[in-house]
Image (cartoon, rainbow, N blue to C red):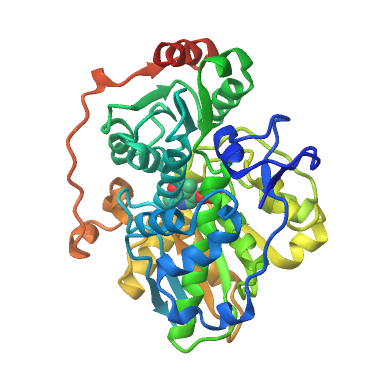
Length: 434
Ligand SMILES: *Cc1c(COP(=O)(O)O)cnc(C)c1O
């Protein structure tokens, strides 16, 4: 398998090039040159496979030109070493809990797979590899944890100062060693802009290899397909063979793009629903046809505070950049903070199920969208205790009653590297690490 850039579609790139570059030389996103379709037999037999076995089969076509079966097997066993259960919440609606990894967010899957693949490819390199990532919250912790002490790799994590939860900030800043956390005085969009500028800086590229661990990196996107297959396997095991409506809480639209890729590989899915918070570029695009990015609005679901979703071009490409085609498969709702709060409370009261704000937006959307006799699956992207401050106010004692506790050391703010929203400041820091 080779990869193309969405900008030119001419040149072919190897997996290693794609992982190391992050973005194509023309500044656009990489895409597989073709999407392989898995055998009907594999899809039929999904319930017979374990999670790592599913991962091996789904990912093999994308990596086999560059990675041996033995190495792939090792990497998927390492990556998918925690459970990803599908829990029935009420009749016809189940939660796919992606938050049982080490930093309690779905981004652990992508970060773990990418770090192991990069380490594999970087084994025989003399130049240092710099992984640059901007985070609105969850990516940072997952990347910091996934890459911590991986040999030959330095990691820079940029996050918007004061705009992530205390626990997220703890996860980003605590690993240390080869993981360099920087609190940018600006928004998540500013952090993303700084990262993009670094990638365009050819002078800097002469000093170090640079790649991104954001959801723009194919190495994160690909493994996210795996759990959608695993979800359908679990549905089938419980006797449901009808294709589900899959609802994903979306910010940069990487997770839902992975689900759509899985569908193109043969996964039975009825249709998709993207829940957003009030950063509603995609819902508005679907209703007006105008793609109109805007400044980020801060919400309770902060990992979805994205004013210009970076995976949008990939998602649209899957539907040949045709609005009507996309609308035939996708609907999208913007869920505001008040509804998120009400939903968290109502679902706890009715079903004794605690959800974080991101997951709550997806529950609300699936509930609204699902028709009689359909099966709805909503994706639970973060553990509720990561957003304990919010939940404690809404449902006093709820976390404790559910058996969750939030214990982590208080940060010494003097140790945090606060950085101006200025590319020169970032460049200076990277040069020092080279
Ligand atoms: C990153 C994140 C999302 C959004 O995922 P995208 O792939 O950016 O659409 C949703 N929920 C949580 C908890 C996240 O960390």
